[in-house]
Amino acid sequence: MSNKGFGKDIKSPKGGLEKHIIKKSDGKPKGVEWYRKEVLDYLYKNVTDEVLPGTMYFFEYDPKYKDKLPKYDTYPLVYAFDKGKDNFIGHNLHYLPAKVRPILAKAILNNTARFTDETIHKYIFKNADNFFFEVKKEDWEFIATLPIEKFITK
Image (cartoon, rainbow, N blue to C red; front, side, top):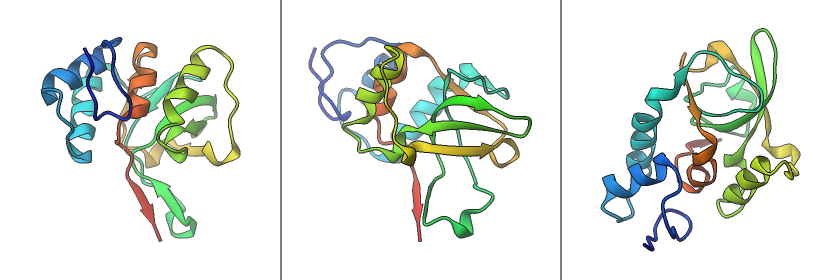
């Protein structure tokens, strides 16, 4: 099965999210809000209030210092690598070009990833929407292809 419109050609569904999106979309490209809603609906079963390093999350975020930021993502897709008492640090894949995101997701899975500083961000727990949607490893490459980011630029 070949299905275009998700940022790459899909040869055959690998993970549950990919199957969900293909089924819900009837194989036709949709708008950003549609993808975001479907991803949140699908990932709802994986909702958590705890972030663990080595895991990928999708969530809604309102930065504490947004007035000082030239650009920020209110729906980050983050691979967490460090956790503090009130925050965590991770790589937001949305800060990379769309075509690079699934390549990086695959490299993370294979332990061969090389990150750029632009992807590193600190997230304060109380500025997140109380829910972190854990992305299962089988869905990392596919979710990275979806246009679910929402950047605010000054």
